Image (cartoon, rainbow, N blue to C red; front, side):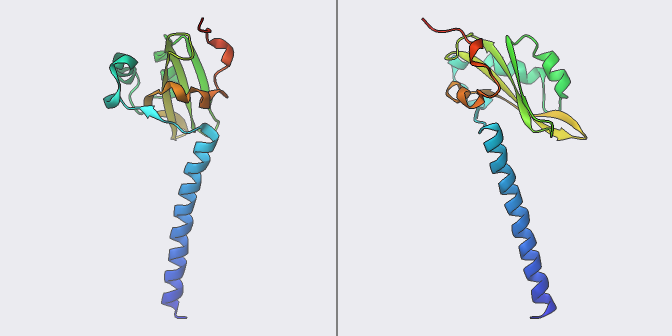
Length: 146
């Protein structure tokens, strides 16, 4: 085999390793944190309360430091810390109803930038996905429907 062929094969192996690592990182992140599916602002139904997400987005734009997020959203009736020490993770802020079936949950996803956790995305969690976050939200905080 020529040196050129070996160099091309090594380059292809490197590309496969890098792409494989990215895929593994995404899969691992989903397994550890739960798959995040949020309702984007443009697809909110009127019953969800688009004013809430608009208000939240105006308070904490992307790039906001995490310490300012918790201050800005202190009006939530509950704050769940679902972050890890490596900068990956979420904060969940519960608004509105205190029943599990009707609560509005704001998700704030962070990324690590210059050793600081900063807002990457803000969304509204669909209520049927709330069970994916049971590791962060104690079940006893919700009122029972009668």
